[in-house]
Length: 186
Ligand code: SAH
Image 1 (cartoon, protein in one colour):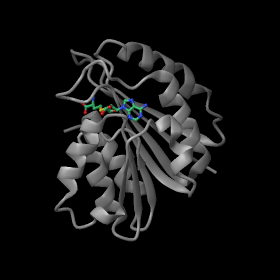
Image 2 (tube, protein in one colour):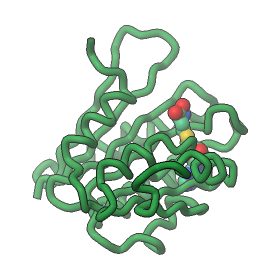
Image 3 (cartoon, protein in one colour):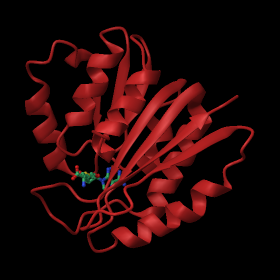
Image 4 (cartoon, protein in one colour):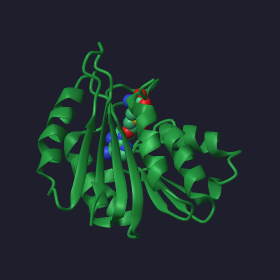
């Protein structure tokens, strides 16, 4: 069967990440992507994981306790808009899960300005062949504004430098998430 947006995001990351790479989870949430990235880059790699909510840091800290590669993870309780304070090295991949933290305060959502600012910061660090993956949940209040700003921003990226993909189901109800991929060509 065709992969849903979340599964597709992992396939697209897996294709471009190898042991030793530095990668970013820009929206840690429950920590599932952080763990996925940690196992891909292995002990010689590095994962920077961001979230503004203490709850996300606590949940992820608990989840990674028994993970063999946990020492390659740095959990950062700050906005991804400030990521250039923490990350200066070349980055092979990054993931964003846009929306609110499931099972938590639905009013704390990712916002277009900080999301786009963070994307631009990562684009400056991204290696050739590197990918930024956005899984955009947009069914919640404020989600449609973020989606529409991304739909304005992403097509403006210079074609000779970036490949930009939109992966979306056309006939599903309840606003399923949309996956976007930005890949550096040169
Ligand atoms: N809706 C997705 C999960 C989104 S989680 C799903 O169902 O799987 C989004 C996470 O981004 C939340 O944990 C939230 O706290 C975090 N977040 C919101 N604004 C942020 C910011 N500026 N920087 C980093 N994380 C942020």
